[in-house]
Image (cartoon, rainbow, N blue to C red; front, top):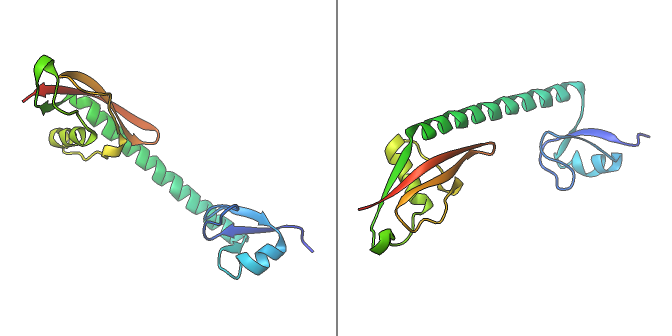
Length: 152
């Protein structure tokens, strides 16, 4: 009797692996749970080739996504400075603060590109002036842009 059985997961299984992973499990676990529930398939040569093709396709997709983010970074950093107008009080202090949606709207207006506001990191902005903001476009790509806050 075999000590371990090699399977390819069809779905994510907690504490075992994710969809497409090749795992080795006890034969009883495979025979009584994973195979009847449709959570896994026995790893044959054909299925292993399918898994490898799927991984390569996913790797290509991620590479294309990263290249697209690099192009967006070049576009954003090429603009130079984004201007945001705020109401100003004494000593160049602005009423309220500059927020992520303000920066996203300024970028959309200047370049026509939408940026996810959740990926924008701003310093505390309470006065007029020039500030640097980081925009996360991809897990490995971050653009740094200048924000100029002016009075209305």
